[in-house]
Length: 84
Picture 1 (tube, rainbow, N blue to C red):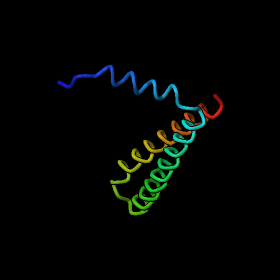
Picture 2: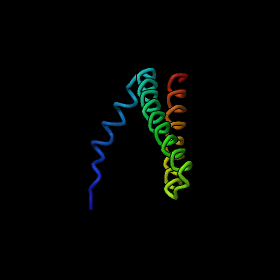
Picture 3: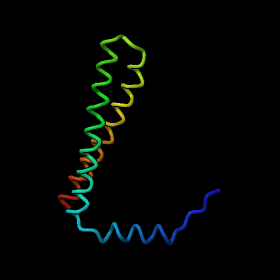
């Protein structure tokens, strides 16, 4: 069983609380751009599978939805910290 070190967690959360909002906003925007790239690649792969009438299109659909959801989440976090 893995032990949770609360002391380490407390120092990490303190770093996040002391980080300026603009820095956090930029960090989340960078994550958004990375997820956007992953989403575009997954969407292209999905359209290729759909054109081929392949059953692999189903898992590719869920992968693209996952990346779209993470992309939206990162964009909202970036917006939140930008206007905080």
